[in-house]
Image 1 (cartoon, rainbow, N blue to C red):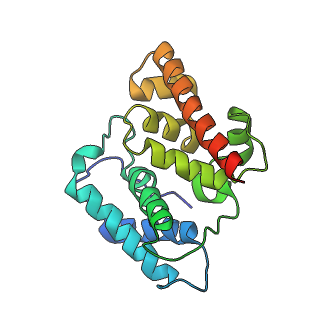
Image 2 (image 1 turned 120 degrees about the vertical axis):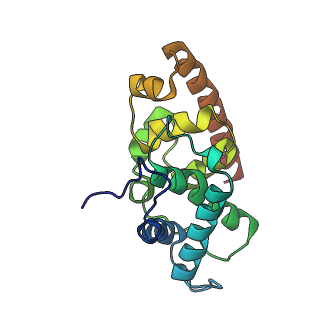
Amino acid sequence: MEQFKITSDYENIEWEKLIKVLMAYAYVLIGDNAEMEKSRVELAYDYSMEAITKYLNDKAQFDPSRNPDLVNFLKYYYLRQIISNSKLHGKYKYENAYENIQDISGVSKEAFLKEFNLDEQIDVNTIVLQIEDELAKDEELLPLFNGRYYNDSKRSEICGDLDISLKEYDNRMKRLRRIVKNITQTAINHE
């Protein structure tokens, strides 16, 4: 099955198809909890529409020169943030029901643990969401994180996509590693 992408003609979007893709993604992120105030489908729809609304209100946030796929942008830049913030701030009641990080993001849990020398005892899903929250407005590190962990891009590919030098890539990776280290240390200390 081919993955739905929008990589050009951003003015003529198949909204019905896009909403279905975003809802399916949100549905998985929401998980299952009998105590939810709304059904998973209702929440998935609400979150998807909120992500689309945020995009339409500020289209300048989307930079096709960095990553031309609008679907990925909506999923990873808006939708994950909205769901994470709702969970953290109690907008809706539900539990984090991630079974495997590979299922929700395409990120290999083992690769993530190895990249940052993390202990397997930590909840990688929670760490990834916290990293995304921390990087939400960081225009330098968020594309690096997304390219490295969601698109599994190599160093040279990321440099080309972001139009940065290898030295700049290394500097940004150092900053990203510090952020990850701080977040994981906080998570370990709270366990």
